[in-house]
Image (cartoon, rainbow, N blue to C red; front, side):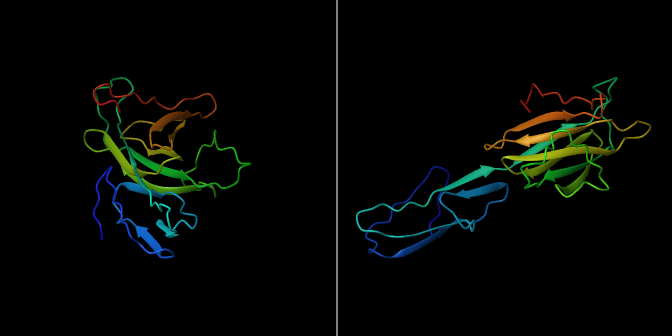
Length: 190
């Protein structure tokens, strides 16, 4: 057992020709592990030692994204709105012929391409946060319960992560009606 931190590596020498190896990593919450050359997706680097050749076991840990926002009143962005409920769905479609770019999800019947991940409620400060977003994935945020006396927005929001798990938020329109905008927090860059 070898303990390595970010950017560290180890070289082991004098292993006999023909010896096999299997290298794995202890799971770390909040990260997705990618193993180069892992053809069977078991997250183990495997191979056979050959004379005068270097065998490498490369692991990359990609931090899972967290998405957080504050639900505020449209007429007064300083007024936080508690008790708004949001559901999050993950796109799990394997059919390249499907176009989900304009999907509006019915939370009671999301369809076979969308998987329900959970429900989050804005707290007393209007804050909502959910994590574990995988790289190179698409999610849909749906407001399912408006806070006291307010109406649900017409549209929804598509959250897309790239291969480095950077987030992009786009509106999904309901006809010509748009959902409320997300504004980048200039203090945090989020």
